[in-house]
Image (cartoon, rainbow, N blue to C red; front, side):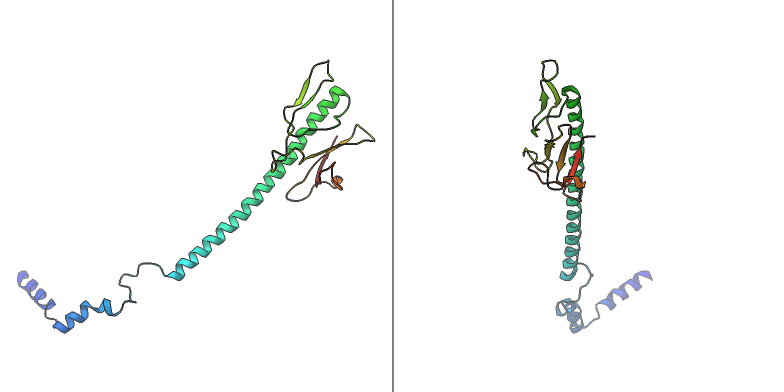
Amino acid sequence: MIQKARSQVSDFRFQLSDNQRSEHLTSDIRHPTIRKFGTGFTLVELLVVLAIISIVISVSFVAFQGAQASGRDTKRKADLEDIRSALEIYRSDCGSYPATLTFGSSLQDTCVGGGTSTYMDSVPNDPLYPRETAEYGYELDSSNTSKYKLCAKLERGSGSSACAGGCGTESCNYTVTNP
């Protein structure tokens, strides 16, 4: 009985007329805009996704640049504090501050016991211009040699107002002075 039902179903499938069969088989060809499975993306969808990705990348790039500048400013402040510490040790040994500083070179003097003392192996340079020798400023007060100022130009924000007018030959917006 099951066998008989199966044969009737298969016979029913093929009872379509030739005209109906051809219409059924070519329906996809006549209507190419109808997608059978609904897969894929339209051009507009792809363009919207590309625009969103571009915006996210642009915002990330700007934020990353700001973070780098802040990091360099923090390094500048730390460098000036390190130089100040070395200058204070120099003054306690020699009785005065050096007349000049050469950034990128060592801070040395022969004032202690006839030998050479090294106070800093290398006086740091500005992190944005590591090969330059004058991005930081050092100025010894000519009227009072127990006073000096160290200066740097911060990329973001400003520092102390004591730097108005620059520091030696350098323009700056952040100053460290002797304690």
